[in-house]
Structures are given as C-alpha cells and as structure tokens.
Length: 212
Image (cartoon, rainbow, N blue to C red; front, side):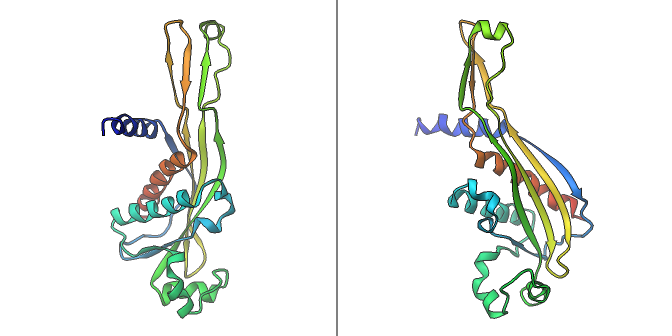
C-alpha cells in the first residue's frame, strides 16, 4: 500500500501540470436542458484517434458520459450501445437526414457529440543539461506532450452544428536542479492523460456555453 501512494501522488501531480485552453469556432445558440438526450459518436469511427488504444478510447467515452451525468444529463449514451434500438427504427446511416431525425423523434436523443483529434506531440520522457549547458543557455530538451481536440454538438433533427470549439492541452513536465548545477528534466505524462484533461474542460465548456 505504501508503494502505491507515491505512484498515486505522481499521477495527480502530472495531471495538475496540464493546461487546457478553449478556442471557439461557433458560439452555441441552443439551450441544453437536463432532459435532452445526448449521444456520443464512437471514437472508433474517427481515424484521428488511432493513436489511442481501444481501452483508452473507451475510457474517454465513459468519461464524457460521467461528466454529463454530473451536470444533470441522465439520458446520455454512446451510439454503439443502441444497436438494438437503431435496428428497430431502421437507422443505419446518420448521413441520411430522415434516418438521423429518428434519433430525436423515435429515440429521444436531440444531440450528437462528435470529437476529432488534431495535431499531437509527445516529447522526451527524460532529459538532462549540465551546469555548463544551463549557463550557456543551450536549447532545453523537448519534453512537451500536447493535443488539439475538436468538440462539436450536432442537432439530430437538422444535422446542424450548434456548437463547435477546439481544446488545446499541453503538459511540459518539470525540471529539478542537482548539486552540479545541472537540470534534470522529466515528463512521464501519457498522451491519453493530456487528452483526458482536455475532455474534462471541453465537456464543462459545452454545458456552460449551451446553458440558458
């Protein structure tokens, strides 16, 4: 148990070092209500998430569901989990306006949440500069782990994008000095962890910007 405590604290530390910023492309013009049904489009459908494992993608999907539940939205689901309901209503192609509209009129889901992963960066896990290199202001080792994530809210009735924004998340790690005045650089953050931070901020931003 004692060995787990430092590991747990390090996870919290690295998570706290991640910063996320929101850049709005389309201001939300709808009023999300707690009774509105929301479907999360499966990340497996989006090729940009191929960098993540199946387990990591599933965890992100569950994270969105949990965050929305905490915000008061109870009718929230991942589209893949409605196979029976979709088959029953003849919904096979969301690009077909008639079929997509049935998500609202037949199943009670007014919105879709779609995610796209843009540019990512995974730098070095560990680096070191001697005291002389620090004095000479030599280039700092690239330790950055970052992601650009797009989140969109789509109306199932009209197919219109009602909210569209980008979340940039960055973790640059940390450095410590030694007795020789050198600098030890470390960053053990995983890309999935940085994305998780962005998802949390993005989901909260979606709810806040679409509230009335």
